[in-house]
Structures are given as C-alpha cells and as structure tokens.
Length: 252
Image 1 (tube, rainbow, N blue to C red):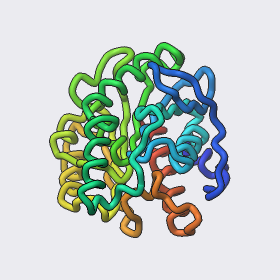
Image 2: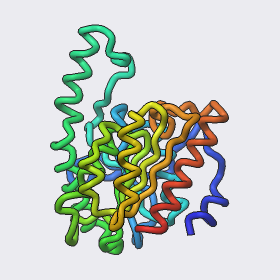
Image 3: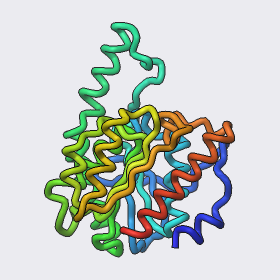
C-alpha cells in the first residue's frame, strides 16, 4: 500500500540527487526509476521548465511509494521555458514565450508524442500490462488529461488513472471526456471557477476523481518552481506527492 511505503520514505530534500537512469523511449531521452519488471507504471510529465530536480525527486517518490516504474520523457528535447521570460511583461519576452509554446510546448503535438511513448514503453515494460497512469505538472497536466479522454482504450494505449498538480488551461470539456480515474491538486493560482467545475464534474455518477486546493501554496509548488528550502513548501510538496501516490495505488 502507498501509505505504508510513504511512511518509510526519507524527507524531501532541497539538495537532491536523482536515483534513476536514462534511456531512449520513442526517440526521447527518458528518466527511468523503478523495477525492471513492474506491475504498474506511470508516465510523469514535467512543467514548461523541463527536467528539474524537483520534478525528478517527485518521480522518485512516486516510484518508491508505489513500487512502480515511473518514467519522465524529455518532451522538449533539452529545451525549456526560460524563467527570465516570466512574467512576460515586455514585447520581447512575450514573443519568446509565445514561440516556445507554439513549437516545443505545442499541446496537440505533445499529446501525440505521449501516445508514442505509451506504446513504446508498454512494449519495453510489458509486465505492467494495461496498468499505466499519467501524471502531469502544469503544462504536463494538460497533455496528460487529453490522453485520458477520447479513445483512451485498448492495449498499448489505455491510461487507467491520471492526475495533475497546479494544472494549466483547465477546461470543463476535458473533465467531461475523462474515462480514467483522475486527481487534480490545485493552488489558489488557478481559476477558482474552473477548479470548482472540475470538482463538480468528477463528482458525478460514472466519474472517479479527487479535486483539492492546497490553499497555502502557489502555482508550481510541486514542480520546478518548488522552493524545497522553505519548510512549508517542502511539507506541502511531500503531502502532494503522497496524496497522488495514494490515489494511484487505489486506481492503477
């Protein structure tokens, strides 16, 4: 059970060395942590800042809590949003950020790539069968939720559970389309009405989901913006990944 494993995990560290390795999956350099013959697996999608120590520490915690394989593909192929672009308060910053979003971070293109990764990873780790989940931070949550809706079925394709933390571009139609169990951890930085709509939709008969707002946190507290030197952020980061692990343990 995730709760037993979580109780044995070391505390979150602000000076963390990731424990996994890298290999190429569907043409993408991919961080890999977990058993060689897993019974369940998760594709973990980072935020717009790409591979970060905070994201990899989260992947390691999910793997340890669940005894699962967790992989973090580098969808941006080494690129990332430059933190200096934000806030996008000059024409130059706006142009650079818009270019990145239209190219490296184009959502439909990355949904298609996610499905390629799912298929290739399903072949690479066949022992997981159909027990695959997807979890995304911010931008990654948008990519993941779109893969958990229409056409989410069949060998090499299905995601049984999905989730996001501090989600980007929440849309009611995405929640309506979900066919997987889904967890959404929000912050006050996301639109309140959109979060409320998600909660209402996932509470309907036939849907399985959890929506919770971490009221003392900010957009990015579980991703690259996490300040793990701050005790409150560190505590809520740890609680967030533990909650996600509990959810995936139940539904994956």
